[in-house]
Structure formats: C-alpha cells, structure tokens
Image 1 (cartoon, rainbow, N blue to C red):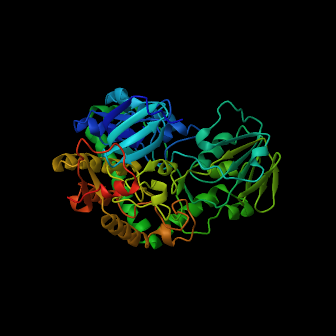
Image 2: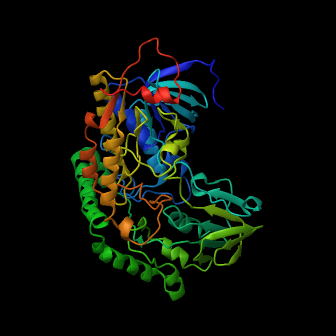
Image 3: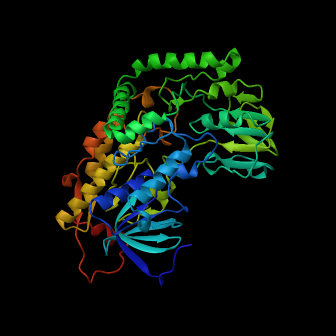
Length: 514
C-alpha cells in the first residue's frame, strides 16, 4: 500500500530503481562522479536483478564471462567460460561491497508509483516502505523483471504445481514427476537437460523451435586465473578479442542476413548430430532464418530431447483440464507440474504503469502505440527520467553490459549538463525523439529480426521491433557519449512560492524553453 501523506519524505538527488547490473552500475558511476546523495530502491531483499530471480536448474549466461562483466570491475576468477547464475549473482554482491554501495541500498522498497511534480520540479515516489522525492529518477529495473504466464483456460484449477522459470520453486521435488515445460526459449533449453535425468516424464510444449548452436563451455584453469590476476592486461586483451568477434558478427544480423546461411548450416549439423529420429528432427527444425529469433547455445539440449522419457509436442499449450495439459494440436498429457519458460513483459514493461510524466500521463499510456525513447534513455514529457536498457537498446549478438555502460556514460554527462545549465530538469523534445526513433526503425528494416520470417519477443503487438539495437555496441557508445542540449528543453527552477502540486494542464505548461 502507498504511504500516507503524514509520513516523512526523504529527498535525494538521484533515485535509482533496481539493483541488477543497471542499478548497481549506475550507483558506481554516480559515486565516481562525486554524487553521493542517492538511493537504490530494490523491491527484493538482495541485489542481483534477473540473476537473483532466475535460479532455475542449469541457469547460466550465454555470453562469455569475461565480456559479461563491468569493464571497471574485471573478475579474474570466473570459473567457466560461460558462468552460471550463482557465480554471476556473487559477482554483483561483490560489486555492492567493493564500491561501498550498501549504505545507498533500500531493500524491500518496491516503487508503487512515481510522479513528476511540475510545481516543485522533482519526482515524487511512493514505495512499499515510505515516500521519497528525487531530482532525477533512473529506471534500471530492466525488461527481464516481470514474468509472463499465459492466461489459459483451466490453469487455475490445475491440482499440481505451477511456476515460472524465474520464480522457481526449489521446495518442490521433481524426482519421478510428470513435468510439462512450456516454451523453448533461453531458459527452457537450460532447464530441460538439467531436470530430464530425474523426472519421470518430460513433456516439452514447443510453439516454435529455436536455432541452437553448440555451447563452447569449459572450466577456466587455475593457471589462467592466476595469469589474469598477475597480468590484468591479458584479461583485458581477451575481453577485447571477445568483443571484436561479436562486433564483426553484428553486420550479418543487421545489414547482410544472407551471410547467416553458413551459421544456419552449422546449426543444422548440430541438430542432425544429436537427433536421429527423422520425425523428431523435423519438429525441431525451424522454418525461419537463423538469427530471426534469439540464437541459443547448448550442447545438452538436443541429447536430452532424444531420451525416452521426453516427448516434444510441436504445439503451444492451449488449455488445462484438471491434471491434463492440452496442446493446440489436440494432444493431451497428464502431468504433475507445469513449468512456464514463457519469457517476460519486455515490450509492455509493467513499471510503465507506475511512472507518470509532466502531462499527467503514464509511461504506459505514452507508449500505447509502441515504446520510444531518445537514445534509448530519455522520454519526451518525462523530465529527468533516464532509463537503463530502455527501448531499442537490447542486443542479439553481444553483451548487454556494454550497452549498460554506454547509458551510464550518458547518465553522468546528463547530470553534468544539468548542473552547468542551472536548470531543474531536461526534457527530451518530441522532435528529437521522433527523429531518433525513425532512424532506428529505418535501420531495423534490413535486419534479420525484420526480414527473417519469424514472430519473436523482440516485436511488440504492432509488429514493431522496439527491443533491439540495430547496430554495433561501438556505435551505440558513440551515440550516447554526451548529451546534446539541442535535443532537450530546459525546465526552469520554480520560485519558492510555487504551489506544491499542479494539475495536468499546468504541469504541461511548466516546461519552459531555454
């Protein structure tokens, strides 16, 4: 419930929402920039974001460890080339300690609402533990925060266990159980081989088969880790090499999808090598171009599907009748548990309903026709709101930590420009936001995500890709290096006698051009 008006209000310069890579990274960069008057509001009881929430069996990153970490905080002791969830979560806990972020953390503080007060030119925040005001609001909750569970007929009456992959019930023993796994995305291809040996029966309901490439994972030797500690330049060189390879691959995804045919042949060989049954192989063969949906990495997924206790149903889950799951193809399967690997609210982030801008409209209302943001970071009509992993900042080829660091550069420069102008806030102009989005969508038209013949979670309800960045991480870094004041209106500080609140028309009028 929202806090009452009588409760004390704490004012801070910056309020950061979320404590995953984006939120902790923002906190580190704020301290480095000399900004110590900030809080990190986290709804859970610990840091870690998606790497705290996703603790399902087999959970690991599909980006190499040395690239999936902050450039300012390399970890020479990664145990594997592709690290698992426990190691990544532990890394984020160490970040909180190493950079003295604990005093700024406000755990169990879910943001229930945030409203721009045009009269006082600051953000007003209601949290589950009290009220805050902030000059600048940084939304770093990320798109992989709120799980999607389909609203299926009969699901409420299922007598067994039901949970989403990001809310795994570790108290429920799957041994010998009949388990339905719904979905074949990045989570499911890790869950299936992890639980297959101990379940009695595994039914995989597959709406669309993914392209799967071998996962070249191995232990990092003690000698390698010692080398990275003694000579950090060697680890930096490895990181640079990993980055360069992925930068080179990006052009095939964004400009020349035809060049992906070679990768597609390799993926087909991977499938053929592990699946001998022609009928099963046919069910697992995608009918869209390699790269159109997220390419998955696994050396254990196909071998698990070939086991006698696994059945692949080439159909979406249509309904539940008692303890029976019913596929869209009419097939019926008795199960004891249903595990949903059905992704997250990415193009309709729920936090959008909780953030209200200068004109009294929520971010969700502003985005009813699709998410847009200037440089993936600021939104017109929402002064001093900066997003980390905002619209069209996602990647299909490299590490999101690179994108996050670019946006953190933008955040630091934003605060510097704000101080230099003496303004209360910056508000992205509609024209600048429109130009940016039109250019992003123009470049998106040639990508495999637009031309590959699939319907992916990258696309919103209108079929627009509002999720991915159609370019290299280097280009995004250049585009977000500094804030261009020509793309913003300067919001003047109000006189002390200004009213405490303003109605929607007054709020809109309070934005003043410099």
